[in-house]
Image 1 (cartoon, helix red, strand yellow):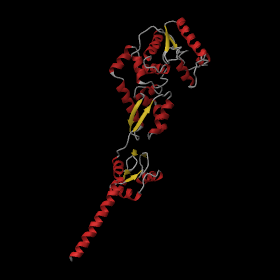
Image 2 (image 1 turned 120 degrees about the vertical axis):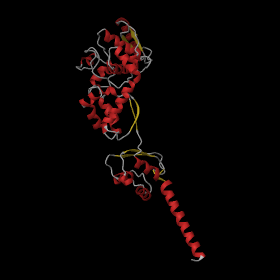
Image 3 (image 1 turned 30 degrees about the vertical axis):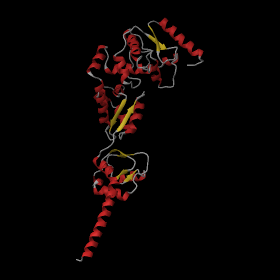
Image 4 (image 1 turned 60 degrees about the horizontal axis):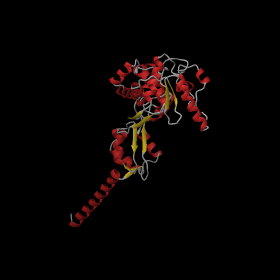
Length: 344
């Protein structure tokens, strides 16, 4: 073989090597998903999904720029035979390799679940269900299953007590029961031996403390006032008085547009009518924040029996030990409303 031929072969091989090296570099490293987009795409892969269904989802949402390179590398990495369900975040300008590697490994991104301001079980289902593969109906069935509620130490009314408002990271494809296991685990972490001992000293169970905390939370948003409000209700319970908590009446009517509870409202036949029934209602009227639960456990020891909104509109309440003093506070508040021509 002549020298010129050798040089030609060498140059050809060099060009081919460079070309293939550059091509493979492009396949592995060049942005190919969510190219020139300013936000990430969340890919949901359900149980029993196929490689083709994954491709169809990517195509439908115009996630991949060059499907030839994507599919070439996917097959090279044996991804079509390794489909794993889950929730995967694909960031803008992502190359093929890290995304395919992520999908193949099942390295999914957790759902950041935050819930608060929940009143009804249906509200809880509607807030949480759509965020996970089990959906609203799956969660609704679970929360209405007496056997499942009993497993965690609740009934189908009090099971919502197990949900502590907070932010949690949970995988999208979690089963309903595993999800409830996680909520129960968080509940158990919160209810330390110290908290349980405080509840026992009050003659209450953790569920009863939560029920009372839900009423306290509905009465005041001022964290520094919650222990005093809790003390009022505990004094009423100790004296055998009805709680006469307006938020429970609103809950009984399921009409959260009610701003002022009138006499006819208190005639409703409901276990949540704390004007007609003594003691606590059968379940919480919202999901109280941990601070409200602690406010009950660390309530103020005082002699107040009544309270109403302060006339200074500060959001705080005026407390009274007897009905006459309470009526004086109530008149001052009503006069303040009248001066400002505010109709309740």
